[in-house]
Image 1 (cartoon, one colour):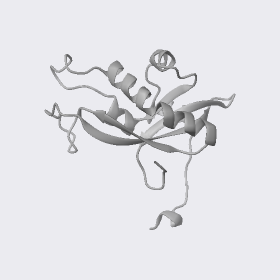
Image 2 (cartoon, rainbow, N blue to C red):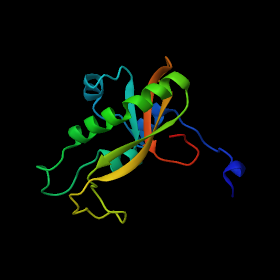
Image 3 (cartoon, rainbow, N blue to C red):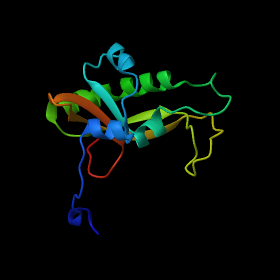
Image 4 (spheres, rainbow, N blue to C red):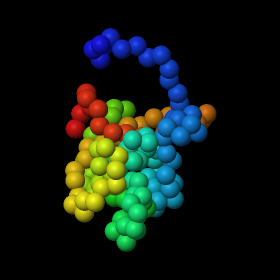
Length: 142
């Protein structure tokens, strides 16, 4: 089935996705400290790819707050553009992988480049803006 043939059968709000565990509202204080005046929400896939750090015994190497700080800084320009023009924007981030593609814990200490997407969405009943970070997908401009 081509992308244009797909039909949406279910939609949910960002807050429903957070409540259901399909999105993560990770450390709002860090986002504010980093200069974001909106909520920053990550899809679970983006959280696992860029922020999560659960390697046994490797707490000395990385931590989730630091990885989130890095993501926020690298996403800043794309997030500003998304809020201004209402379109999703790609950004790139170097990070040490937490897991291998098969799901096992990675032993790599070498950072790799990943591409993520940031977009502005409405959040809550008041429709306030939030920034949503997700894994890269076709059709999103760099």
